[in-house]
Length: 324
Image 1 (tube, rainbow, N blue to C red):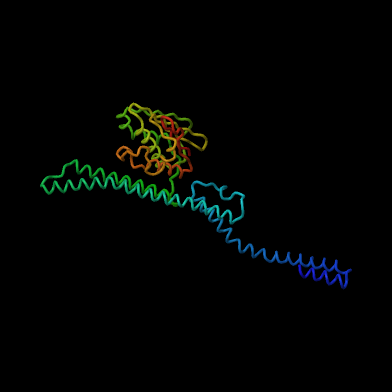
Image 2: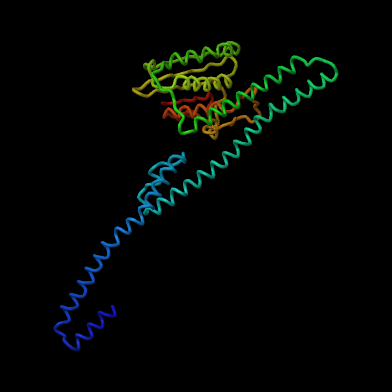
């Protein structure tokens, strides 16, 4: 700018007729220099921003893999540049990681409590046996049976925890093959025969569509049906009724299980699928299981690419439906 003013002043005094052409040439040269500079700098800019774009892409991918509560468009929406996207991805990751850490703490507390209860009972039983042996008496059969029952209880809990942990690994694979879902359901219902007869609970089945060649992992779907029916029976009153509806629509199918119990509260509709959650905190594992059944069920359905949920939260008679 100073140079331009100087040239303008010089030529105004010395040669006014030449000023227009020289200023035009000057600015033309300046424009050309700017273009050349921009072209030269562009590859450098690409070189410098490429790692940032790569980092953003990797961060977004990682966020979508680890953060279950966000969608791809949430991060890649047209708001801001790569740095804005990177910032959004890190924000989502931070929130999710905090939630994961809290969930991990809660899980450790739950496991400690669930294992601590049978361990305490075993410890008491062992002390009783020691006292009986010191007195020259043989341990009672009931005390030994109590120890055996508590050991089995811990074994079931540890097995379910291990299964749930394995399903979270990336290399976990389902054994998908054409399967007869109707036959699987019949076998699961038959396994509850003694229990349903004792409580006089009837199970009615309604089938819509052909379900003899559904592509699923038969062992895992059997476990899903077992877990859902187990809960339905557990919460059904004596002389109750359970309805099971199977539907096939093209490549998709769904199973709904409805009991006539008290139902599930609206605020617990999602929580029942979390590990160790029980609607009634006073329930013991003797009546409430390990507290992992529905968590494992949701994981299996998720691995199949399906969904599961409560259709009528807050109403009598819970309806749990999964779709694949």
